[in-house]
Image 1 (cartoon, rainbow over the protein chains, first blue to last red):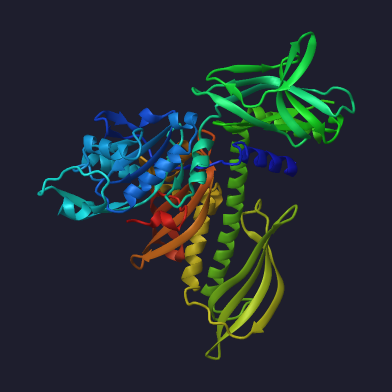
Image 2 (image 1 turned 90 degrees about the vertical axis):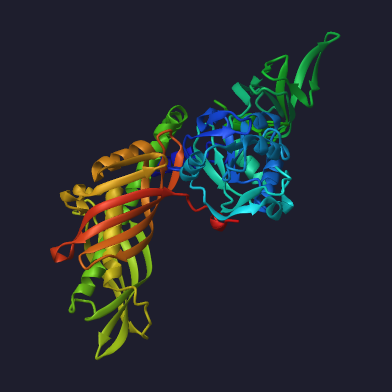
Length: 322
Length: 269
């Protein structure tokens, strides 16, 4: 019984391809603000997307441009389907200076898809309280030319323009499609790890259904698997490779009748258009296993990995009934 | 056995949230037992330091330092294996005795240990123990672990009047203030099922008759959406000292902090 419980715990904790980020309970929640398109927004409007949220201000002389540069790299490292489902938000803690128009220009310097968040001081304080953002104003009415020596976008060249200077935290919040904060990161988190964390929160863009094996003759050196593969994302994807620990070579093949001869051909880099379903069935497309390491009669579970250009690795598991 | 395993797989495939919830209940039960055991041992050391003369222990104990512990479990009992240094006053000199003993618990019986098995007792070279391992140290920890055992579901350690305490709860944008039991229901409603483990205690003595302690607690469990969840809870607990040395709980103020992710999460620029 103990073994069963341990096994179930193990399975439960490993259901998300190795990454299972816990919810940071009690952190975050809905808020109202103005975005850099000058529209009133609710944070709940972003539900259905993964949100990466940082905070700072456009006159920040050091970490903010660096953080946004880091987020630009992370965002550009995401496959197309993931970019469409990921929103990068930058909350200004200096809403008096950071107007929507100014934030828009500032964000566009890094990526036009990035969204600046501003509003009233009450709006910003509410966001800070919900997410436990830390900031303190350390100087007021400082002439802009004294602080913007490294600014990426100048709001004003007016000699009498002034701004505030803040001390603030550097945390980046990773928020799932239901609005739950799932992790905290910063510019020291490797881009690879951050990208993997974002992807772990997005539904897989490839749907796998009804897979089964043709077990063939008892000591056969090859076998085939059939089923249904659907690209449910909004973007084209490419199947780069197929692998399985049970065989030396695994490929996507297509059976065709040419001049009354049945020919089986390797179909490398098979393109899956957005929404396309590929039926794998006898005398058509199938996954071909060549050089089985042991007879299928001795195998109980077949693991297959489909590697897609955008979607990454998509696992398939087939249980064999002998 | 094979059939049970197969059935368990099917249960998980079709009801993953049920399995996660069961996992949370198992963890909570572990936390309840652990905190109950530690509370009993802290209470025991507190009692030893309250009395000048004790059977089987040195007289005039000045401080107690726990060197090593290990929790084992057999079919019937939990056994806490301990190695402890007792600093005591003898002929106006501080001496140190090392005592190794097992505390044997039957948690179905009155939440207390049922016996102590002495393994070894020997005089050792005097070891300077920090003065903080005094009577207060064990008294505060006895309370803290009892309180944690209570939060994990062991309600037998406190008298019923604990529910007279007021509990103020702030979880994200949600706030609640009410009796302890009502607040704990709200806690479950908003956060799900999980276990509470103590991370630190800061003691702020207010007056001779009252005490404020700040507890940092790690919570982990399963949220109401069936996801794994963690939280760093700060509880500020106000208590009144009663006749007989017991504390009565007056107020609990609870808020959730950003969980510790790394040294960098405190950095500002």
